Length: 490
Image 1 (cartoon, rainbow, N blue to C red):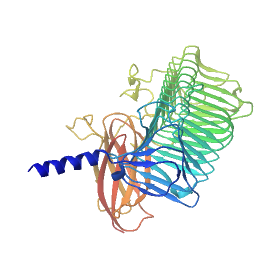
Image 2: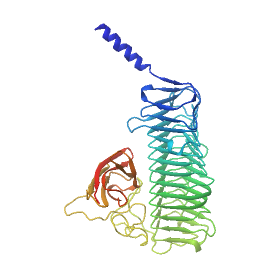
Image 3: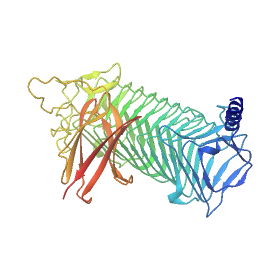
Image 4: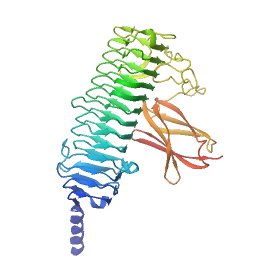
């Protein structure tokens, strides 16, 4: 018996002492969690033409101010319960190590999924390549944690928070940012997203808030900036600030409680619909730039600290219509006309005090948007503002109840051909993503992403271009996800 106890004790000590020393230099192959922790004691490089796979649960500890450069390919795939961790050996300490530097890396081999990255100078830098960040948590870096230079950046459902520079910095780069939270970033500019010198930027859903500077700032020459279903709030400067870009385009965005203007645009056209712009300390919208078009419809601009909409352009190129400009301190419009169908009435939010900008029954904004704008999901004329009031009929005797969780309530018809309708419950306003997977575990595509209202939401998937067979529909909202099986029969 004593021999068995000694053996067990020795095995336990051996397990506790397991580690892999990475002295620096070239690396390739596969790192598995059985080698944890991987202690990096020098600068590391994945050479051109080589590949490193980092499996779920691997913990990489930087023992000093070292960097990780990728010229070849690197894929780090964690899971929701077993992340890949890039950390400093002694705990949180911004700037303790350098960064993950992707330099002309292989385009299809630069994926970080379910990774936790903390305490570098930066987390990720991409130069002349493209990088995907999926469900990553990036925090506590001394500089801007994500930097793209002449690169393509794809971010999905990731959190970038509490860093010493702007959350995302782009130069001559293209980015698609979906369902991400970018918050509490500081430093000299401290912007949520800071883009310049070319490229395009598309933001779908997500929350950009509490950053020291502007929430989204772009200084050109830049391409289009698209903002769809995003909440931009409580930033120290503007909500959105664009200078010399091809255009600000968007719908269903909520821009509120920012330190200066909700939207500041100079030498940049505007084409926006169904925005809610509320309680910003400066103008709701400040617009300048001769001979540029400002088009805004089906939106609510209220309680801002100066003019609701201030245009230095004059009214000749301002196409405003069917908006509600209410109780802005200096007035509703300066240098522009309200246009057809506009009102100046209390929008009657669910709770102005707690920033719940959903409309209540009886709001003058219901069915009051521009008739040419897309209908609301309940098939009625679009409401003003980012959130529509659901007028879908309730069965006699049925009392609507606020859901307690995110859930796919139903999917019908099932089997279907070729459109299936999902009812998704949401306890609060939130950003969501609907994905389709095949039975082999391969992602078919992301078929919807956007903003959910509290209550029941309707989402359709048209599978007309997909072959018959079984599919899994996966819905995600923050840390919640739900999965349902469906069958397409043609």
